[in-house]
Length: 73
Image 1 (tube, rainbow, N blue to C red):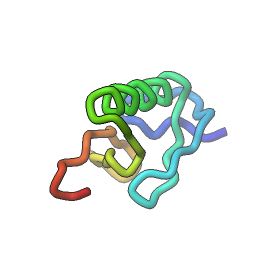
Image 2 (cartoon, rainbow, N blue to C red):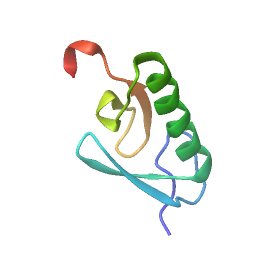
Image 3 (tube, rainbow, N blue to C red):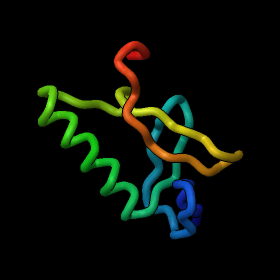
Image 4 (cartoon, rainbow, N blue to C red):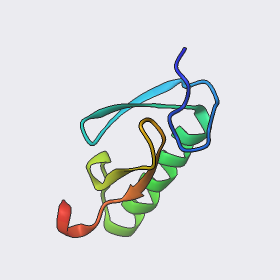
């Protein structure tokens, strides 16, 4: 089983999400966090998709998920 790729997390990954053209393994906690971010964005703007988020890499496999700036959409 893969390990969650989220920065600082070493939990088992149960989900794989395609983000910025990469397959991103996520544990249950970070998958729920991703869903909460999408729900908040949808409540704010009426709709949300994974295309509105980006990866912010600190190393080869560690990352954080950040809100994509409007100019990049």
